[in-house]
Each structure stands twice: as C-alpha cells, then as structure tokens.
Length: 450
Image 1 (tube, rainbow, N blue to C red):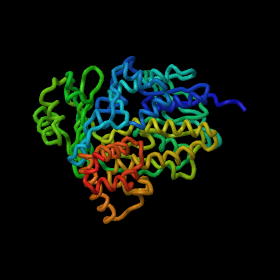
Image 2 (image 1 turned 90 degrees about the vertical axis):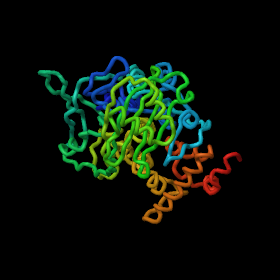
Image 3 (image 1 turned 180 degrees about the vertical axis):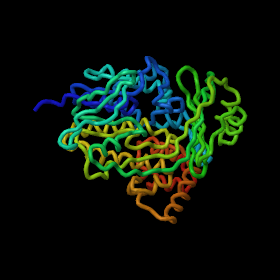
C-alpha cells in the first residue's frame, strides 16, 4: 500500500502550522494555504487581529511546541522572547489576591504573537515537503463517493482575474479559526453541522505598547489580573521583545475598557496591585490603543456527530475558541497537534472520530475555565477529587472553597503553584482538592513554611 501523498491545511496560524508539522511526518507533501501574505519578519497580519494584544505560551504549551519542534524555545529566545518561571517572574492576581511568588518549575514564554508565529512558521516551512501558499481563500471541499470522502479543497487566489482550482488531497484540515466555514462545507456535501456550545463573555480588550526600562517592575516579566465574574476588570502586562511591555486591559459583561489616556490611568489605579498603574503612569508610550471584542467562546461539538466525511478534520479555534482572558489558545493548539501526532502514530483508520473524541477530553478543562473557575473545578473535567458536583448549592460550595483557596495562596507558594499548574494546563483541577491542598486552605496558608 502506498503512503499517503498530500495533506492540505487551511489556515497558516499557530494551529495550522503545528498541524502541518505533524502531518509532514506522514504525508509526502503538506500544503498550507492562507488568505494573508506571510510577512518576511514578525509582523501583524490582517487575519490575526489578536496579534497586537498580549500573548504567552503556558507551561503545557511550551512543552508541546518544544517536543514538536526541538530547539524552538532557544530560537524564540534568540529572537527576543523571554523564558520565565510563571510563578516567580510574574505576579498573578485572583479575586484581588496576589498569588505568592516563588520558583515553581512551571516554564512560560512571553513574546509578541507575531514573533512566536514567525519562529514556528520558519521552522515548519523548512521541513521537507512543506509548502506555504499565501494569498488564497478556501471556498469549498471536493469529494468522492457521494460526499463520503473529501478529496481536496477548492481554492481561489486573491488577485484580480484569478480562477478557482481544486487542490487534491488525501486529508484536508480546517485550521481557519473561529470564522471557520466547515459547517457550511459539510452541508454542501449533505452532512449536518455540529451543535455549538457557547459561552457569552462580553469581553472587550484594549492594548498598548510601552517602553520597558531596565529594572522596571523589579525585573519581573509582568503582571496578570484575572478578570472573572467577581472581578470584571482585568489586565495582562507582559514583557515582549525589543525592550517593550504590552498592556492588554480587559472588561467583561459588555463594558469597554477605556481608550483614552486619562481613562486608562484611572482604570489601572482601580486594579489590584501597583504594577499596571506604575507602567501606565511612568513608561513611555509606543503605540496607540487598539481594541478587540470577543463576545463569546464557541465549541463546535464535532465529537457528537454520527456522520462525518473521511479525509477531513477541524482543529484549533475552528473547533473550539477559548477566552483570551486566560491566554490558553496557543497552548491548546499545540496540545491538539501533539494529540494528532499520537493518533496518526496509532494508524489512520477512523481518524476524524478518534481525533474529535480525544480532543473533547483535552478541551473539557480549558473550556470550563473559559466558562469560569467554579465550572472548571466542579465539572467532569475536574477529576475524581473535585468533579461531578452540580446544582446551586454545590456551585456555591465550590465558589466559597475557591475564595478561601485564593486568599490562602497569597501566603502559600504551594497553593499558588497548584493554581498556576491548573491554569497552565499541566494539571487537572482535581489537584486542588487533595488532602494536602485542602489542609493548607483550611489553615489559611499558615503551612507555607512547612
């Protein structure tokens, strides 16, 4: 039996690039198509409007990308990214409490989104058989066997007078993001689209670049104020390449963060901790304020479909778009690519249903975190120690426990590390309910020195 010849990935962002890297181990040719023209150096792309806002790779994402592209972290650091310990080098505020800073062994990478994407794209494009075709739209799928198998994708170059053509493929992967047209393409082949779970966030973001002077914030890489139901204002202040900070302010519930200097200064002063206000009041401004609205998260439940065409997959934000508040998107994309790698190693049979089922397990916790910390710790993704509780009284109990946990973690580095391990997708929320953690919470963090 001949090896598969070509895979096509639609969308050359983080998810698409890492998917292409995985497919290059199996397919002779991997073609990435994207509507944008790829910049020759790190730069904002029209198709990635979130690129101007704060980004980071969390611990699980760092490990996954490094496994897929050995040496990636070193390349990113050489390009200007900062390698950090997430607990030691950043301040984290949860419901007004600053998590106790301490070495944790939880690695992170902070840099602009364009830099991270550029380093990944350079590495993937250099792999044998990988080709990036920019300036093309995907407008539909081709199929055989009355739509039972996808055999390629119809592309339309974005230039005057261009004609559409079919790019044949043994596998087509949709990594086009939250604006994915996969449900429409499936309907054209005679399939029902997936049900959608939605989480109304009403999130709005406003970002600006600042000069990062030596010694700013005591040498730390930034500060994050987590926005949530009890704290609808938040911020991500992160160091970036080129001696800069990016500040992304967050408002939930349909309100807008300020886009003027006086309003931003007042907003910063109302946040817990001095870090954001220090930067907005003393650092040189390097850009205008740019906005982004993110009304809702969407999880398209392809795992629940009983019919799905062979030769087709959906991944990344096209599958599940998470809240940017928790900065998990790039890390989840890397974890999905790692999952695909494992499944392909086990064999190509029934790839789509196997992938969607396994991805649903992977997505359960980050999706619950998008919905809120109480859901993350009380739903089925929480693990045996904390899962399965429902109802108003159960959620109230969890909310009370989490409030005590945040307060105790202000003085206990073990509790702080446990919280950040969950937020970084390294651990299940169940770790927050072990006997040791419960004891520390009960003691109000007084066991920190033990």
